[in-house]
Length: 312
Length: 241
Ligand code: SF4
Ligand code: SF4
Ligand code: SF4
Image (cartoon, rainbow over all chains, first blue to last red; front, side, top):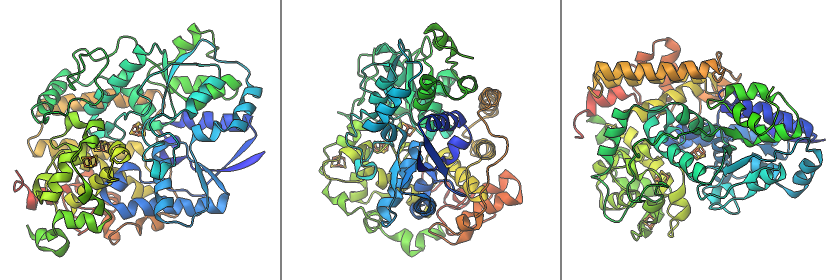
């Protein structure tokens, strides 16, 4: 039994409770005791660093102080929290604590072999793309990510669970993050592109380890922005584009020239978006997955049933 | 614009950002690597490499009045790839903060209102309470949209319907927490940040009650966080465009 400091962050206490519950179940199964920081506060996420540099670091620093008192390791599952804590640690040196993200934490060789030993139900037949998003990787000066443009830690985890990992080149593309609230049209555009790419990679689901990535991909598939708003977005965006700056990542299926949301950009056949810990728990046969599936906007139960996994 | 006569605000933008750690800005040789990797260029009016150049050229108003600084998602791709080690993502942060400090009318007021509602919630509870934060944000955004003529009643109604649909869908799936999760050491949180505690005026005015007070400018302060949009509209409004 080892003990690890745990900083859940606001998302895991609210909209992403299934991430928290599944992580706890997995840790319990692997003999890891999560010691939640006493009276932790919000890390400030993107709002704090947008409006006040100092507030952003102050908020994160208070948690670092708590973490040092709790132990030498700190697990911060939310990508945004992870990034803010690492940033504060780099800017205000002296807090001796190793800050871990879920993928890195569980993909170390000894954890992987432990995971393989305890596997109850390999997830054979599931085809998935790993989606890392931005903030666990970039910028490497802050995150210490060994391969920020092509991470592999979640790939290793998924393979250990028996999942067929599909190759795609969108592992670390942005989902739009917190723009979801104020500009859902932009997030929908980014997420549509990701979902289409996942479908082209012949995946039947997307795996994430970030509450914002999960929510954005899940919600944007479930809710579509009205066409009128979309059209005005397309109108605004094109004339301002200077020469030579075509879309960095052309949408698959388009000629690769236009960045505007394609007509009928909504996907036919939605892809469930899982947290890696949900799938780990499913494969380990622990926790209450049925409760988690209910919370998804795109219901994963038909897919799981089709692949022969129990859904109750 | 009274605020522009104060010392910090009259400093050229380039000096202001260099003082805060972006000396590297001078090294930019316009290779456009930042822009080519940026996922949000489709919604920007100035490309990231143009922002860097515009700051160097002293086009402060163009930069601070741009959509770009607000639609940047802080994904850090630009900073990761810049061959000259320029932290463009941090530059965007500093430009957002200068926009607030100098009370330039933001080109994307909804984004500002969201950040303010978010921080207001953090300051009130020590943690974000999504339902409260979203309700406050929505009310402030709809109200300011109507007032500024950015939205007519029909769009207002469509928005409200969309939000209700999403809200219900999330509520039904138990994705929303009904009660805030509060921390004990709230006073510690309220003392944080670059300005004195009135700074977090969102939290204070919110504690008083109505969401409208958030944007009606009752809590004037020189802070970067607490500047209410109403102040911009009242004082600097219209001078930018
Ligand atoms: S992919 Fe989206 S949510 Fe995930 S870290 Fe990046 S911006 Fe954040
Ligand atoms: S990548 Fe760096 S050097 Fe190249 S244009 Fe952008 S800021 Fe300038
Ligand atoms: S941090 Fe902002 S400017 Fe830089 S690549 Fe991401 S969205 Fe573009």
